[in-house]
Length: 101
Image (tube, rainbow, N blue to C red; front, side, top):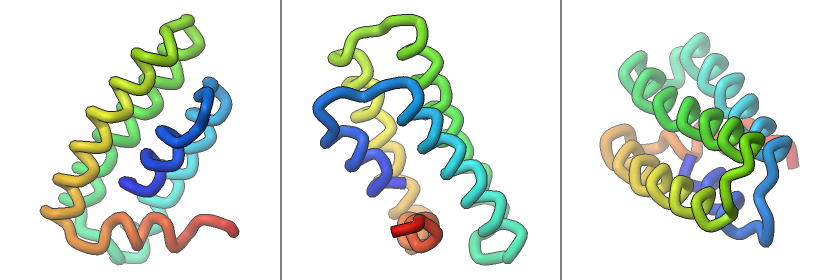
């Protein structure tokens, strides 16, 4: 999740469709990992909160919030994602391993 948010923060402009794609990827990947028992239910639920926040930010973009506000919201989620990685080591790698190159 950290990697996903880092990539979003590195973009010069973040738009709604891009955020929606990331939210959909995270949702799908988390479902796969849970079904495969690659992550615990606790990791799934904890990560789902960040995925939901990314979806919410996508909705806020559609409502016209500023890029500054988007960046601030994403930075907050980055902190959450870092804490999740500490609580559930390997979560970021497990998620990113499913990303198409």
